[in-house]
Length: 244
Ligand code: FPP
Image (tube, rainbow, N blue to C red; front, top):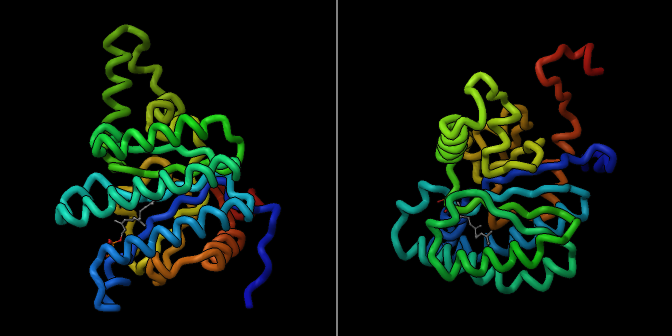
C-alpha cells in the first residue's frame, strides 16, 4: 500500500495518452472496437476521479492526426463512440460543473461529431469546475505549424515585428492558449513515447508510463500516478538545493 495522496500537491493539469484498447480486445479474442468501447468507461471513471482529486485540467488524447490512417471501420467506430459519449455525458457535465474544451483540427471531424462537440463546448463554457480537454484530430507538430502560420500572418499584417516573438506570445497561438502546461503526462499500454502529443507543452511535465492497458485503467490507477508525481522533485532547470 503506497502513501496517501497529498491533497496540497495535486497536479493542476494531467494529460493522458490512452493506449492499449486494441490489445485489450485482442487478448480476449474480441474486435478492437470493443476495446475502445470499454475505454470509454475508463474515460468516465477517470474524469470523475480527476475531479475528486482536485485536478483542474484533464487532457485526453482521444484521436490523433495519424489515427485517420486506421481502417475506415475503426475510425467510424471511434467517431461514433465519441459522439455518443458527448451526447450521453452532457447532462452529467452540466451538473458536475465540467467544462469541455477540445484541441486539434476540429474541422476534420465528421459534421455530426463536430456539431455535438461544439454544442457541448458551448453549453458547458460557463462551468467553473474541471476542464475536460479532448485532443481530437490532434497532432503536436501540426499544432506548432498552425501557431507559426498564425504568428507569421500577424507579422505580415504589420501587427508585430518578428523580434517581438517570445515563448509566451507563441504559446498564445497554440490550441492550448489559456491553459497551463501539463504537470503530469501519463501513458498507458506499455509504450514509452510521446507520439506527437503536446510536444511544446510537455517540456517540463513529469512522465508516467504504465503497462496497464487503457480499458483497465481506473480511479485507483490515476491516484497511483498522482502519488508518483508527488514523489518527484520538479527543478525547472534549477539545482536541487535551489528548489528545496
Ligand atoms: C489507443 O489504443 C486509443 C485510441 C487511438 C483511441 C482512444 C479512444 C477512446 C478511449 C474512446 C473514445 C474517447 C472518448 C474521449 C470518448 P490503440 O487502439 O492504439 O491500442 P493498441 O495500441 O493496443 O492497438
